[in-house]
Amino acid sequence: MNINKTFINNLRFNGAEKTYFDASLKGFGVRIRKNSASYIVMYRNVYGKQKKITIAKTTQITPSQAREEAKQILALVVQGKDPQNDRIEKGKALTVAELADDFYEKRKLRIKPNTRTDYENHIRNHIKPSIGNMIAKDVLRGDIQRLYNELLCGTYVKERFKRENHKYIATANNCLCVLSGMFEHAIDNGLMEHNPCGRIKKMPNNKREVFLDENGFRLLGEALRQSTYVDKYALNSVRLLAMTGCRCNEIMTLKWKYIDFQSQVFRFPDTKTGPQNRPFGIAVKNLLLRMKMEIRPESDEDFVFPCVKKTADVAKNIFKRSIKKYPGLENLCAHALRHSFASMAAALGYSDAIIAGLLGHKLHTVTNRYTHLTDKSLIRAADVVSEKIDEQMNRLLN
Image (cartoon, rainbow, N blue to C red; front, side, top):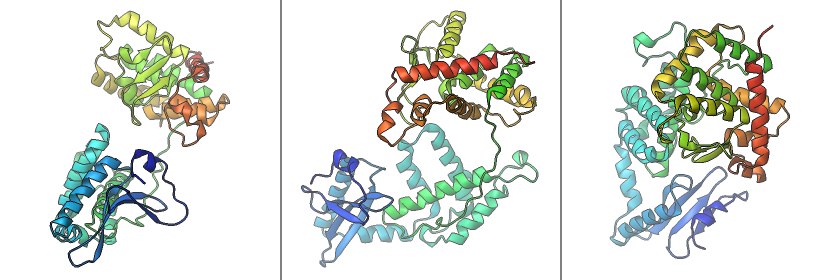
């Protein structure tokens, strides 16, 4: 068999660990386990001892990239070297800081800019100051547990940002994810044999997030009407978030050229899950057309919200100072509007597949076509949901 993209996509775990070898490159193969599949290279050193090197997981690099890496490893074997021993020796003195830098360099091209920033912050502010000088292979679970406990208490938070009796659960959990990824990277490259982050129990983040029902959307509409902020851009950004279910960054960086008014589709060149066509409803279309008439952009390259950073900041202040003063909206944030949009769609009787298509989620089922094809059923659903939310937001309170 040839190990290529088609073969990898069709690879399935059948109940037992199994290795498949490539027909054209001797020693190059794929090992599949219950929870993962990895590219490997099998070879014999100069003493005839069989060795194995894990190149990377199949989700991390393409078959072509893995094949090139395998060729380089096998070329070293032909020269009389033992690549596995070389990796082990290199790993003996590898510090956590060096591992973090290597992990970040390999990972940064495959993650979104915001995620890269999070990785940088955790590595620079938490991981390196605490355990950066330790030898990576000597790090124990107790070391990770101590760091996690320190993060929960805000040990590495600047004094001016600290809050009394506050647990920094999200920071600790996110940093633990970065650490676990780092050590998995070391294991995949033969630098370590175990992940010290295993069995570290995360604290649940019990942040209470509000989901708006019909009355909640009426409260939101009233809060926007009573807002002391006169910035129409920011007010309209909140309305669009409520009526589309889009992520905050997708609305704030929306350009006129992304909007297909005729098809009622946002044609995003990049989102959290890649390029997407996302349907929007008739109420959204009407709002965007009114905005376009008022703004009269010189080019389709222009942003819908010209001062993106300023609009985002003002919108945040609307949530903090105007919206949250209403009972029932105290915990409302921009992302909660996305969940509220989905809840409204569910209340109107739409299926999980339709809701996934409206939000741009992926479903790993036969219905996953809804997540990348914008058909009439999705547009009709977007029309109904957006009009319902618009109706509630513009209905005066009794």
